[in-house]
Amino acid sequence: MTIGLLIIAHDKIGTAIKNTAISLVGSCPLPIESLELCGDCDTEESLETAQNLVNTLNQGDGVLILTDLFGSTPYNITAKLSSNENVIIISGLNLPMLIRALNYPSLPLSEIAEKVLDGGRNGILICN
Image (cartoon, rainbow, N blue to C red; front, side, top):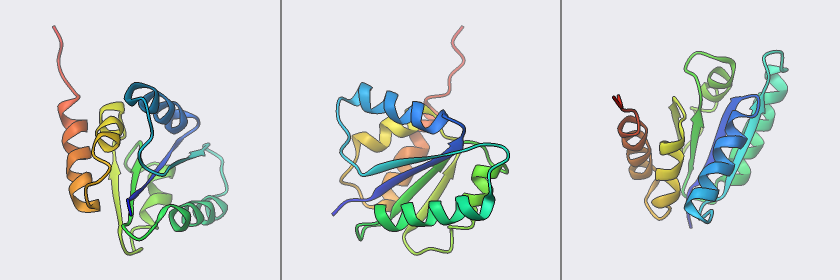
């Protein structure tokens, strides 16, 4: 078994990062979905869709949910999923985070969450 990966983000950000990461890694070793939310989305409908995606992605080892902006609509919908067993949520989605997840597909949920968090932090640099 393996974990599932769900991206919940504004507009097409999640899909763009997902497609870019898969292209850079060369494959997609994890079940992954993205949910695109707009500013005026129906939050109850979006929550139901997100819950269905979590249920589909969870093959027994849990789901890692990545969201783009803490406190925003995607995050607020994601936070309502936190009571689910075997769900870990990380906010601040960036490309290094997702690439890290795809590079460590066999790790348990808690360990891959730490790798993803480290990848996000280590991918932010001042380059001058």
